[in-house]
Image (cartoon, rainbow, N blue to C red; front, side, top):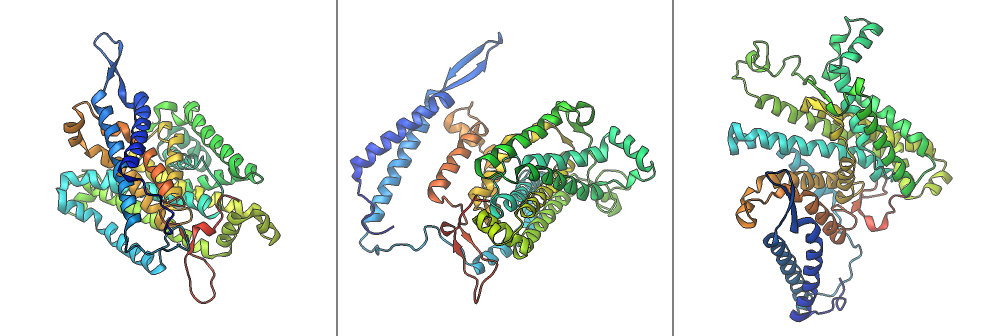
Length: 473
């Protein structure tokens, strides 16, 4: 910010502005927070007013805006502040800093289960490894998969959860559904069926999801921007409706239960004499399976990251980035935009299918309710907030958004402030929207707003995202 661009507001001006913010917060709280629907003993719906909670939130909004304006006013008036005009609006991250951050993050991830065991014990570590570690890594993998389509190729995809669902249902049907078992037995013989375990179904689920990515890619070859977003959104809803209505195969709303879990080189994680614990002479505990699933999704996520980085350096990766910058110029350079779009959709969908297969194996149960449009919106928000095209940014955004959601379940102490009826998890979407607004104001290009060029003459230098077009493919 250059000297003189900030207009001093003073205490009275800050109070007036903060009052407007408080009134806006009051208007938003009236339909969302003030009235709560409760059911009485006669099964009648009653509206319970929550005046204290509403006034508390309004006061917080007033105080936050007032303090922010005074802090900005103080910062602008500092005599030692040197007038300067930044070259880029976004702060870049050097390759060396990114490499160190990645190495430190890997060390922490591999040690995370042991740290959880040491800090909260065996009983409490299951929650932290499963609800935080595994859940966050699933969305990191999904974010990296969608980052190929949106961040690198510039194709706005609002139906990415469809590929997630295809992978999950592919594994569930191939591994546990009687209809598919009978069909495969008639087709290739019953002796071959036992080999269809998790490790064989995993690549098959990814290939099937990639196949559906190609099917989606063909109709949208000539579409861009909003039109592409609408078609991909419709594709996601079509897949969900098929899962709901094809009851004979998918089970409809009832879903599919009893999905086999992955084993450790043929050793199941159960209490039998042939299980993992008995084989190694250990006392049986569900913690072993949880730790195994954590390292499994960690390996799948790292595989997604490595493949994405390698592909970006290949001609197909540079074609994706050229397509993102300008499709017309991309065509004029002789790049086959048809193959470029199809490869982006197929590879991104394939990684979504891998994540879906892992999700089905982890949950042991799936239903169409797990693959709604909200999931696509969350994954897309992770990519956008992290910085489209940035692998590290997507990982940070997934940790903040998914981990922040899980943290709300641990804030029961807030009931002592806002009342016994206060449930922090009910305000998940409200906080989610507020965080998006803040990020879009503070970092409109995402948390990591830079690009690392794949080709350079003498040295690799980060390029600010302000100089990069996005979403033109």
